[in-house]
View: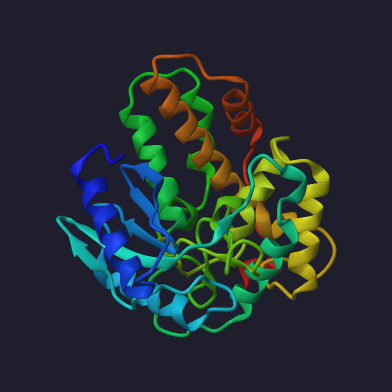
Length: 311
């Protein structure tokens, strides 16, 4: 049952929208997410999402347009523009079946790699704002700094300081043309039509133009930290390369392209983990310490090659 006014109002909107699409729908509402940055409810085959309170409509609308025009990669919205619910922007989507977290062997790493490659190879169908990955990483670090004294924070902040300005959201990204998802993980894939249609990417809040290696960086960081098995990383990377993804070379060592984004995502994840531990008044757990240890192992970035310096 709804537990607060936003959730109740969003549930009502989802029900109304679902009945418009399918007047005889089998009624039933479920809360899919209820966080400060997003509340998501489902009614029958319709999903309603209340975006973060600070969402800029001038940035969200072109992201919705891109999703509508790339239905072979991104789940297209049901409406081209967001509705307004109080102080929140609301968008409506068809329901898609998510990845089953209880069946890791069925994780669609090949689909994720292929979809990302297709996205990165497709020209922007409409003018897009910058991909929000670096800005979100910077926000996570700022929250860690504001959370109070924490001895484990030192290696995280040190690793952050070594990153180039663009990866910290302090300068324009070196690529301003490639379309990127901005927040790739397995929770961003659904099958549509459910339950066994093709996989599609969801969540356009961070979609934009930027450095495509950022979209590979979270799996790369998990692999480097020992949190993602090597065979799953290999499946993902191989699928991306087979589909002609431009973020890494077609063969050979991918890490020169992935190093900076993977470091940034490791720092972001570690900062979020420590902030959560501090808020809960507890010591970091084993996974959180592994992320901090990965930051502590990061040395200075390699000097750019003569070819890169000439670009």
